[in-house]
Image 1 (tube, rainbow over the protein chains, first blue to last red):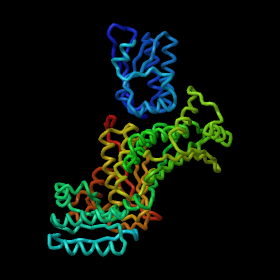
Image 2 (cartoon, rainbow over the protein chains, first blue to last red; image 1 turned 180 degrees about the vertical axis):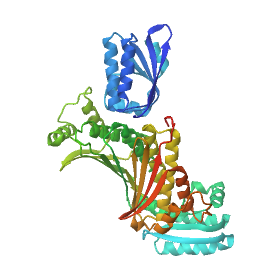
Image 3 (tube, rainbow over the protein chains, first blue to last red; image 1 turned 135 degrees about the vertical axis):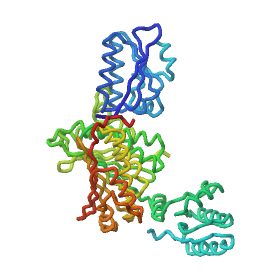
Length: 117
Length: 252
Length: 144
């Protein structure tokens, strides 16, 4: 058993093919596979517009960044989008250092990200 | 004990009539160019305001000379009393002479601490490993930002060490951390690497920028991230070991 | 295994490291907390009563097995731990009423209540070994 991460889903009013996904904990090599499964399964079931709420996401590593990029690509291929909101300063810095901020759709606040759907 | 530290043991009630005695002791030390003094107070029952005033004056005189006064072994009652008098803003209360020596060495002799952690080559040990080292950094006065970066460095390098190994039976992964006041040195030692000489050469190439960086490539991402977060980054092989060394400077 | 300076400031970090690992290996929150207490007492005793010299370090290893954990704490002989006093404290039966003369004895007593076995080995280094077995019917609850 590795580091725990919890994912919870919330509906978006008026948009049946969209969800807000809250990430709680650390996203690292020990739990990326389980997160990958859950989000890909969501997309396979027609939810192709996702807003990831990172308010309670404390930490992400390069493996975690990799799956975020994968989600972004997969959502676009399915005609949807993968947006990220409420990123803490430390996590944002890592995203920025690796250059992933130009490839990911990042919003400061959750409302802003949801409105843009 | 460090020769640079002068220890005075105080006992009993430090009433106002003892100010002169204390003043003379400190003056003697200063005259001998002893700029670092430990006031051992585990046998002190009571500290009066005039004595506290003298201690503060001594601290100021020592600090002006680049030195320090450490208060050690205060009992709970005296600590609380001194806190109420605002002394905590001026003095750090240390539990023992040994802790004062460690503090002196840390601040003045740049003597680092060494911590070594050895884990089985399994990913599920890595999160706690990185938390431990980021906790050490925070405890030793590094910023939250530095601690987070250290966590990232350890995570990426340990994940690499675990994921790219193929030895049977699997060998432990060892992280040696030497932490100093203004920088940390990490060595990640791995006997598992199936990479051998070619693998080390490939990593060296990535570190030196000789291989193009592709954000979508998993291994490249980790090495690129570590490269950006540290001041020095090198990899070598020695007998059957792959050793990755990283130096991270403290953010000022 | 964690090898760290003989400085009590490191103990909270080290005990949390092992407690979280133990919890992550499907031992209950209660078990992990009790192990944390055992580690705390072991390390504190070793540092306080061993009086390590500047630069000397403590080694703590934890073997996490399916039904138990085995903790070994090593300190160099040069640290000056009173082996006779330590062995006496370890061997004294827990059920006896003991007027604890020292913090060492209190610490060992707490460890003995919380663990299943404690032994002292005295060879090149001094090693205190503590075994704690998984309790029957324990349920896993994450610490996080």
